[in-house]
Every structure is written in C-alpha cells, then in structure tokens.
Length: 377
Image (cartoon, helix red, strand yellow):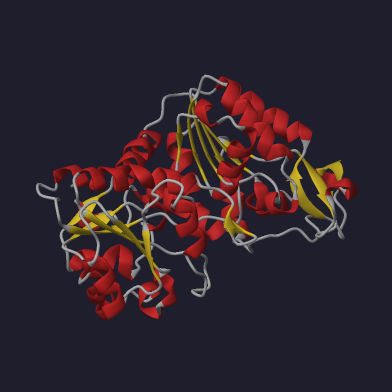
C-alpha cells in the first residue's frame, strides 16, 4: 500500500483524512476515546509536516447525530482543533482555506448527507474539492462502499494512514497464525460471520463460536433456545459446521427473561433451558473450556462479546479478557464491546494488538482485503 509516508510534499497542502471518529457517546460526552487516541498518530504526523489536516468522519447509524462531542473530546489531544458544522459547500471550503499550516479542522458527521452511504459521485467530488490529497485512516469503515471511503479516492491521490497500515500488518499475521491457534467469534449476525468462520476453520486449530451467534448452534444441536436472539441461519449450514471437529461451542449457559436483571438469571445445562428463557451469557463450564484452549494456544484471535454485554451480562467476556491477558499467546482482538471490557479491566498492555474494526476486521480476515483498501495499492 501507498502510505502517508510516501507523500513527498506536505507543507501547506490540504489533506483530507478519513478518521475513526465513531465513538460511544453517553450523556452527550465521549465515553471511550480508544479510537480517537489511535487516530492521533496520523494527525500528528501530518501536523509535523505542516500539512493542513481536514478530518472527515461519521458518528452513529441514523445520519442525524453530531460530531460536536467528539470535537470536544479531541480538544484534550489537539487544543487548537477547529470545527465546521457542515461537511461540504462554501462554508466547508472557507473553513479549509482558513487553516494555517499544521492546523486541524473537523467537519460535521459525513452521514448527515445521504450521498455518503449511497456513494454518490457528486457528493464524493464535493468532499474531494476540499483538499489535494486523501488519506484513509478509518479502518473500521474500510468494508463500506461509501463516498468518503471509496468515492473520494477516484478524485484524489490516496494513501493509507498509519493506523490503517498497522491494522493491515497485524491482521495479516492473523491469516497465518502460529500454532496451536485459537479463534473466538462472538456477537450476533451469523450471515455476516459465516464466511470468516469457514475461513478460520481452515487455518486455525480450534474455533469457538459464542455470544448470540452461539444460539444458532445451540439450536442446531437440538436444544431449546427459548426467547434467545437467533439469526434464522440455515440449519443445514449450521449442522455442517457442527460436524467440523475444530469447532467448539458452549456446554452450559446463563439464562433468564429477555429483559431480566443480572440477579434474576440462572446457570443451566443446555438441555434444561426453558421455553420462556433467553441465553444471556456463557456458563462457567463453557468459560473454563475456553480458558483451557487459551492456555494451550500460541495465537488467539477474538472478535465479539460472549454475552449480552449491553445489559450487564459481562462475566464470560471479562473472564476471557483476563485469561488472554495472562496467557503467553500472541493476541489479536477486535469489536467495540470486547475492547470496552479490556479498557474497563485496564489490561490493554497485555494484548498484542487491538483493532479499531469490528465488521471490517472480520471481512478482512475472510477476504484478505477490503473496498477501502483497494485504492491504496
């Protein structure tokens, strides 16, 4: 890939940087600055070269959210950063022109314009008109064929940012792991994770499937899943995967009513789950099994939580975080809730690499590339 280091002249040059600005917001403030901290290496590199840095990013899924809280959080790292309440048009162009050398400008949420998700050519052209060079540093959206990801590079010379560079380097290591190798895939949406599960079963010694994703496999084994979240996956495909001896699945579970509080749940064998109960987390025997696999592994790849993390069912996820942190394995981790657990337990330094991507990480592992990486070659 061409990287930002390959740009010969940067002084006084306006550079449009697609950054990872999609961070969790709680009570109007940024709740986790992990992605923002990761974005700093490219921003600071460009600042030192006296480029005019124009940050492009999104927040949320609705297209109505504002990046203002992100801007406020970024002030802690870049005190003189500026903010523009629009993304394109004369106001945005004027704000870009007014930047001093080494200055940084954050534009408003790019998804406020429908042209972003639709990869509208005219919208991409308007974005490109703000700068002379494009730098892709938002690995978390590189799997999206959006205007700010794949459209802008058709109008400007494109380079990888330092975070995207390290993401590709580290995740490429996960494609050829040291053995024994263990992959752990949690979260939900079987349809999006089936390709990577099949790929990992070829190159890893064991693949554990848990979280809401594991519910489809519990059902495929003939057990009651009650009111658990399932993706409606093709049971024939589930059974084919279950026949693979490399696949590991849960052996017990923590269950309760869908919206029940933590203290109302119970641990049970899979054959004792009731029709009015939902699987909310992995059980202790399952955790012990995965901990044992972690202890035997030289490589551990993990994406996605093992429980309904947002509702407080975090025990299995946190136990796994601590098990990996204590292991000697080369560890590659991704996914927002997984990263949040690492942050909460303050064991970040014990992991080899923590990706800023969730879905992008899985797509890269399945395909070896992403739409947003293609223009950088």
